[in-house]
Length: 62
Image (cartoon, rainbow, N blue to C red):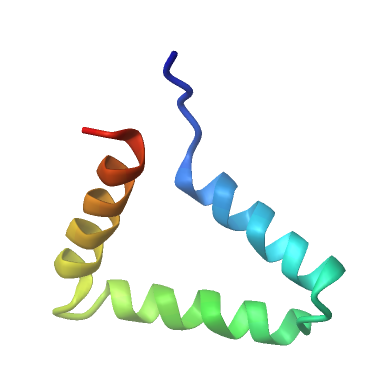
């Protein structure tokens, strides 16, 4: 059985859980999102994409 779930939705759920139950501040989540957006626009963007794809493939068992 295959379940298709966007990675952004999973990360949003993790962020919500962290803010709600782990007492992580909202500004910290926003700062990390901005940092990730800035990193994606640098030379490291393709490496981050490849690493993310590799992790998703490992979870999916491919």
